[in-house]
Length: 160
Image 1 (cartoon, helix red, strand yellow):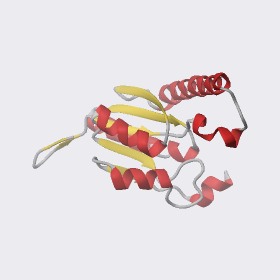
Image 2 (cartoon, helix red, strand yellow; image 1 turned 60 degrees about the vertical axis):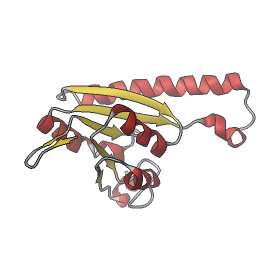
Image 3 (tube, one colour; image 1 turned 90 degrees about the horizontal axis):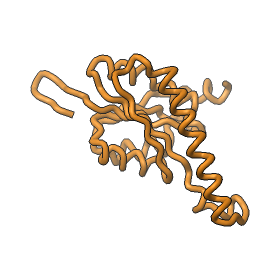
Image 4 (cartoon, helix red, strand yellow; image 1 turned 135 degrees about the vertical axis):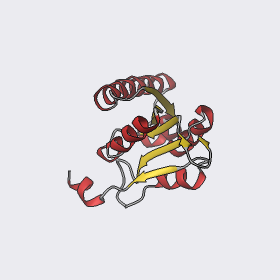
């Protein structure tokens, strides 16, 4: 992000999504920032690495785990294409990213790797039962760039 005394230039905006309705609440803010600054939108989805949780899912051989991860990746690509096509049409440029691992760590890595200027994300994701989620909290506390969190009403998202 470039700044001078009177103007901020936001070249790259990151929108981490878990494909939940909560995450979609950030889209109007993403579109607004992008239109105002002509920014690139980087859309990130993080796949949980199930290889680290083998005992939770039963004993699978490596081939089975690889097939599950390939399916997850293919599914994520399809969902990202749908979101980008449906909700981000008016944006000058969007770049899709898929990572495997811990969501907060992968968000922070992408901020550095892509030289992101601003992050816009929901206050909690799909599994959020509280006003503030653990991923959002970790990103806020450890990000090197501004992070805007979009408040999500827990009662409304749990009822829908």
